Structures are given as structure tokens and as C-alpha cells.
Image (cartoon, rainbow, N blue to C red; front, side):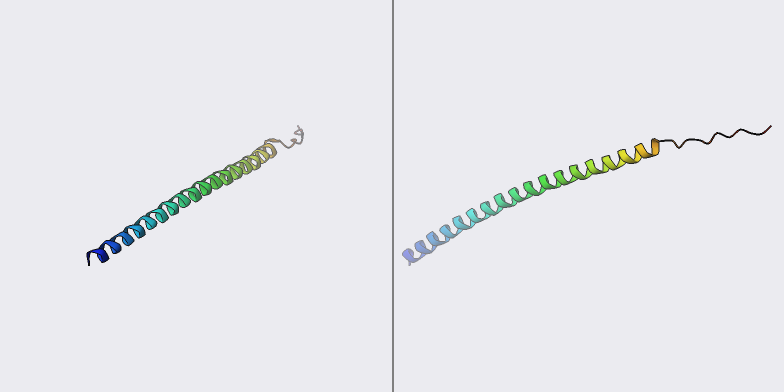
Length: 76
């Protein structure tokens, strides 16, 4: 019976070690994906901010141009 218990304990310890490696691999992969996702989000936000800035600059340039005022003289 003691040999049986020792074999079961050894098998369970092996299973625990395997599951710990699996969890560590899963955590590493999740961290890598999170890092990639954050980098992609930062890049997308940067690109969008650049586009908005360019649009705002074009709009400001267009709005900054004054239309020539008609020269009218008041009749006396």
C-alpha cells in the first residue's frame, strides 16, 4: 500500500509540475500578447493623432485665409 501511495504521490507531483509549467507558459504568452497589443494601440493612436493634427492644420490654414473684402464707398 505504501508503494502504491508513493507512486501516486510521485505521479501527482509530476502532474503539478507539468501544470505549473503550463501556467507559466500561458502567463508568458499572455504578457507577450498584451505587450504587442499595447504597442499596436500606441502606434494606431499615434497615427490617428497625426492624421487629426494634419486635418486640423489644413482647416486652420483654410480658415486663416481671409476673403477679400469688397471695397465700397459710402455715397455722401
